[in-house]
Image (cartoon, rainbow, N blue to C red; front, side, top):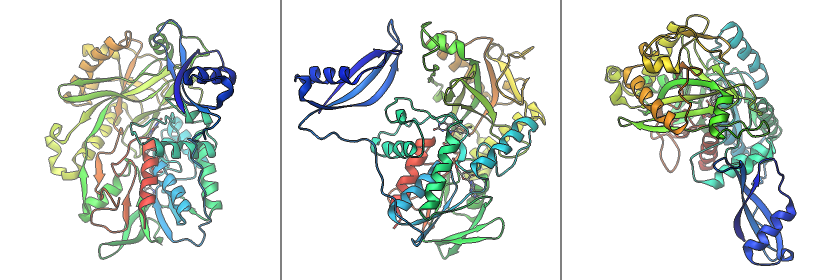
Length: 512
Ligand SMILES: Cc1cc2nc3c(=O)[nH]c(=O)nc-3n(C[C@H](O)[C@H](O)[C@H](O)COP(=O)(O)OP(=O)(O)OC[C@H]3O[C@@H](n4cnc5c(N)ncnc54)[C@H](O)[C@@H]3O)c2cc1C
């Protein structure tokens, strides 16, 4: 096998014949000796005169067997299998459940929120009437936090084997197979709910169980061994193990651990604002003025090191919209989502600063929950500035940099609306001063990023978990509570859809 690269202009389809000829040239053989060609990666290159697709291709001789990257899984019928309680139906919980079925265990999924279809009505109420349902919102409900998102499927993890296991299953359940080769794959919030529903049907057809509107409140213990869980409605579920995949917004779970003295740790996270630009501007900058409507909507990824802390763009949503990701009344949290076409006229992204416990000594009194309480306090401050209608406190980027209140604001995709407010008074100085310096660095990387047409809104605070639920590195089980498996982003071992799903697979693989 020989790996080689080939490029084509964006609007030109590459043919099988061209791929075979390129493979033959790269291997120094005649096209007849080429048995197969496989595109393994497709990335966009806008650096040169033309915008190109850059393909990484594997060429095989007729004498060689091609290696299939698509991971095919044999699922068992687990109706009579040993039950494993899976708390949370986000990517971690769902991919853990699929792995459990493959291994012959019966997943019993307990989810505080509603099924993905019913969840949509609560999101509509949240946007239009600003009613926050504490169990059904952008973070809670079937599919977890990633369901109504951009559905970006990137991860920094280098364990590609596991990534293909996640991507292959997403394709099996309805995602476009291009996600297997795209350098920056994404699905989109219009396609994700159907995929989540297909996963549910698959799990139940194989003998797994779902219980919606079922919030876990406590564990059933025998000494230091977890036997099951107790739910808000009084129901109890027992199993051979409990996978705890409740995501980074389940503050009640962190409080439960702190109250009972079960080991958790404070963890660094990042906080800042959401910035929204006209997408046409981002297209112009990123494509160096060569953007054409048939080209993918442009994205960006920015990072700067300012006074010992990372400042970076987070969860960029090209052609997306801003949404209220609050999980409690009286708090305001912003996040972004896009549809599969990324077709809105806005580009938004979190611009966040890493926060360490040493930045917030006044929260030391909260012990391991210090970072979480800080996160919660800033979300309440954002709400107070924005008001009952979940309006987002906002400034034009240029006004924020000059430290003046905006007289008026540009149009925004955020349905509840924006209200001019001094972000300097909502976010602490150690964040705003770094944001200001970082914006100047970003402007050098993307000329035009600083513009009065861009708006900054508070607050982007749920970038990752501010708490880690301590687990053993090899067994994946909690350090003191036997048979309890903290999992995914909420446990502090993952961030994003793919890495949370991969963590779910790893955890479910380790259950004996
Ligand atoms: C609007 C938005 C857009 C995003 N966009 C992207 C993106 O494009 N790409 C990306 O990689 N990541 C994105 N993310 C982040 C991503 O969604 C998370 O990293 C990922 O979902 C974490 O997976 P998880 O399974 O660990 O937790 P979660 O997805 O948070 O799932 C946890 C689940 O547990 C349930 N739960 C919580 N507490 C309890 C309890 N006590 N009892 C029972 N159930 C409980 C919740 O209801 C939830 O369904 C986005 C997040 C949001 C909010």
